[in-house]
Length: 192
Figure 1 (tube, rainbow, N blue to C red):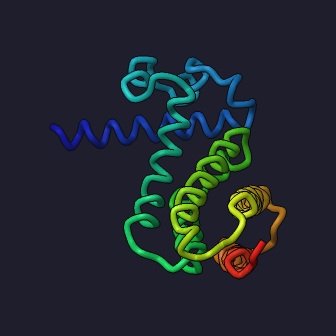
Figure 2: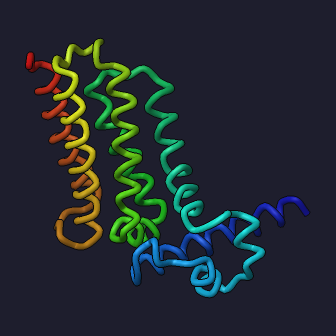
């Protein structure tokens, strides 16, 4: 009985998430209501509220679930700073491949800014933790470089999902890794 309930809960959350992703293609996040989501998902309000408190809670859970695994992988094992772009980008690629349809809808919507914000936070948390170790120099310039990289990375994936970049996801990941490594290495060797 417990397995059936667990599968049902996973199915319900997935239906809610997909309904929200579909709606994000039609209108801004702040205009989407719980009623919109339950109608699109063809569930009742009780099912929605059994899993989430409101629409921002759905987005928060999706982002939290996505980035918690990524955060654990990056923070739990010691890395050289030049390995971080590889680890981040490979994991992001895996996440995008797991459910391309959902990711495309979120990344090409108003909710993509929330994903970008989480990626910036992740990169800042890790790289600032190791800033002194790698002698990056001027702290403010360092933080600005990380923000620039994270924002650019999110824009690359958003453009890729929009069909503006004629590369495979693997090729995009490889090129993004090369660019990030260059910026990080330049920042690591610069004495500003």
